[in-house]
Amino acid sequence: MLAVAGGVAALVGLVIFFFMKSSKEMPRNWAQLVTELKMQQCGFLALLEDAFLRGSNKVELYKQPGKIALLTGGNRGIGLRIVKKLVECDIEVILGVRNPVESKKAVEKYLEHGKVTGAKLHFEQLDIGSMKSVRAFAARVQAKFDKIHILFNNAGVMCVPYKLTDDGFESHMAINYYGHFLLTHLLLPQLRAAGTPEARSRIVNVSSCVNKVGEIDYADINRSKNYYPADAYNQSKLAQVLFAKHINLQFEMDDVPVQAHSLHPGVVNTDLFEHSSTNYVPWVRQLLFKNPEEGARTVVYAAIAPQLEGKGGTYLSNCRVMTCHRHWKNSVQCEKLFRFTCDTLGIKNFYGSSEQ
Image 1: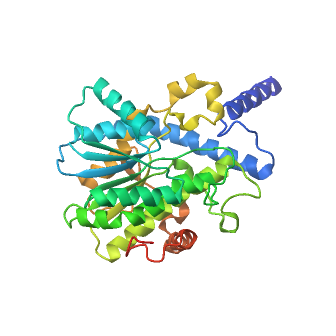
Image 2: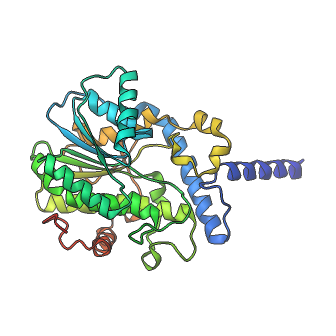
């Protein structure tokens, strides 16, 4: 009986492993298998957290006329729900999207369906994975807006096949991290201008719980030698967390009226999972994962919650301050990544002139 029970348990474990894989490809070696197991464990614990802290995952919306927010990737998934919440707060929204025309149609249709009126929306073309596109986008924004009160570094990809961008960067790092790092640098003048000692402007990095199992491979940042999608994704999400922590510390030291946060929105049922094995069993995602509206709550909470005023540098999940990667409190590791990124992108003075 014990042998039968053990066999059944092993079979169930294999089935769960296969259908919950971060990508559709199987691990090809021991290191990749360990990465996959760590990621699945992290996801399982996050699902439990989402279930137990469901009551905490709430954000109070309130009117904030005159404020301007910039959001990357706001035409679908969590981003679409973020836009709706911002509009309900009377916040003007700039969306950086790949296709402004189609995105405008999608967003306006969604808002109309939700009976939301009076939206002040601006759609600008942005390929966040292209540094040339990021610079052009930032220049257009700077020409039109003197102030930006909230910057959402939201757009992202997860566990996609190996690809280098035109800049020679691995796509996870380019889209999830490098593009947003550069955009933050370029728009710092607008963020500084919007912030006050009583109401700091905010930078919100939408990361993931898997930052906890990520590692920055400085020797092979593109992961070209032993590419496994989960390794690249986890690395990029850790980078977002360390980036927010480091710049917030500098803002505090320089008495700059800007604060930065990173967060895990939850395990959310969006097309971010299109390359994962969960696509084989979509009903599981519908049953266990948060819906996009629930996923948007912590993101908006980080951006507007009065409770967080003056408490930048925090990592959030389910609208609560939580802990994350062991390097998060290590200022040396945070600065190491920051300097590495500045060198990679050719940024000589991140906090000074944006003309880099």
